[in-house]
Image (cartoon, rainbow, N blue to C red; front, top):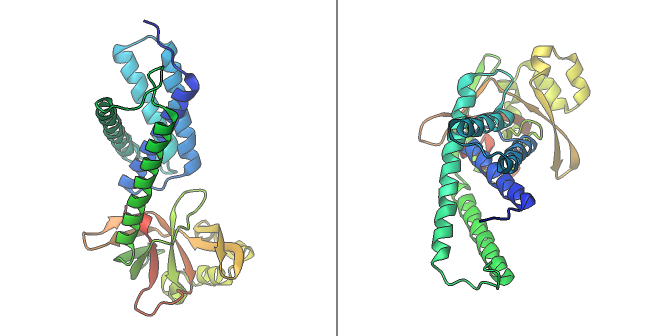
Length: 288
């Protein structure tokens, strides 16, 4: 029996599934996720899925090829400067667990729909109106779930312990679901810290440069300090411009369930409307 497989559709479906699994892996491990790196890695996986149609091999060689491509995708998505085997093997394992879970859910959904009397056309395919109805229902469920998670996270309190150049301080934070600022290169979330805490957290030279908000001031800093600064495009009530954010040595977030290491950047600005003891606005994404 000959089966027709549309390569473009196969590529598109595998690309979307791979991208989703890589994104879920980054959220579960609280790793930074770069959209572009994730897209390239997903494209590699999708191309492999199409190429595998022309390779009739099986058994151990096919399994090793699958594992190799999966490892390559995780390397492309989660590779860091200081390469450590554990930092790659952990997301590699989680990625496959997530893939199995998502694949199982899709298989279960297909089995469930097979028991339903769906309106099929002459070719046995789901009709266009039914397809769009299912797509709209899926979008509505996703939107409602996102709103629910956003409401649940809004107003949550947390403690953030920052270590930077030998200085250490614990900040009282409020989770701000509206804080979506990220470094476009690394994908790290940005925590907005009260402007008055810059002196307590930063060395004097770095503090002056960040407060000035002028990228030219970075040229006067030693390399050990200037390498910590990231220039982020940001839009504020005063207009668009560059925001100077700082990379700490370490950061731990504690919401009452024990401290968890996270990767983030610190930006210093006035906290508008802050009437309590909040010292920083924490992106909800850092809570996983």
